[in-house]
Length: 443
Ligand SMILES: Cc1cc2nc3c(=O)[nH]c(=O)nc-3n(C[C@H](O)[C@H](O)[C@H](O)COP(=O)(O)OP(=O)(O)OC[C@H]3O[C@@H](n4cnc5c(N)ncnc54)[C@H](O)[C@@H]3O)c2cc1C
Image (tube, rainbow, N blue to C red; front, top):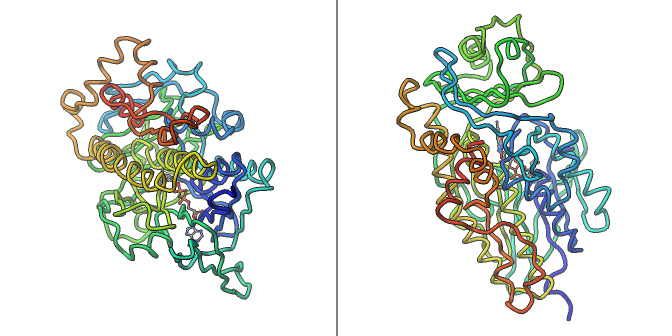
């Protein structure tokens, strides 16, 4: 019997789009990846990915290349009070350093270059990545069993042409401004945009070492909350902070940066004491669409759901979303599952987002922005859990590596007789698993 489908269009060559293409190619399923930009997106965004994401990277065969490019060690994550720089509580991540599933640390721009290289060097037979292909709209005809996209093709300065590209399924992995999502739901994307700007920069400053800072430092303060973390070779640190003022121009936000840095960085430096290499400025949101699947069009990762970056959920969940979706397509392609499995994916991944990721990521940002820095270490429930875990390193290790409530193994929906050979993509736990996810994701 011929397979029930032949080709999938993936919109977006970000981490979710490229990963999905890799997993499909591993099962010899062809895909076309359409990317609007002339190259990969190297803006400053994600840098840390918890254990559930590492498990996905490992399954995709990416971990050796990622580890080779990453900083060698990442010993602690702590929460500091900005007012006096006091370290309030920390997690010793070195308890997991001998595990291949330990947290991953690398700038997203470098990770997607590794993913793209794997697409080109290992899976060229099955993956066709096309840059300068901006999807305008996604449509479908359920009767014919086809979906398609209208694409504007052409780089800057070139004459543009519009082409229709058809396949059996279209998957929108096109990020927060998704054209696929808009084709299905227009401007409807329920949730909230936070009343701040998020300012992100790579910084070189010898004061971090002089003051004994290392690892990741969540900064707690109503005016200067953020994350300061060692992220690259040669003393490169990522400094991100929220400016809790809305409506300024980018120039006005940047004019306030020396004041934020003086408060946040150890040693209260003046601008001539540090070097800023690159900056990006974002609005941040927590939002989710009504459904991740409408007929033959599916929407995954940031295109479907957004969360604020504090705690590092976004890309991690993007990876888990598409690893699960790949399992569903593979099961369908290989005759191990019916097309209903795609509906199951859409329901389960949306439920997980709303139940765990949305709520926890909001708690994460509120912990460092809205709570009282002088009492939070006593009042915050999550810090209470950490205090207990810190009493027993073996228990902390086990806890950090445990399968979490945001992972889900869709191969369990394969037909009973055929599912023995399925992948394990993590299973859904309750109880302790939920707490483990909380800690992993914080980290
Ligand atoms: C400052 C910041 C820090 C973050 N830190 C972390 C972190 O530490 N850990 C973590 O897990 N997450 C983090 N995130 C979130 C993470 O970066 C995102 O969740 C992740 O990039 C989502 O991947 P994606 O593939 O869904 O979308 P994207 O990375 O946005 O990729 C979408 C791709 O689609 C393309 N595209 C868009 N529209 C079209 C179109 N019409 N046609 C064709 N192509 C199109 C885009 O050009 C892009 O290449 C952070 C985010 C920010 C902003």
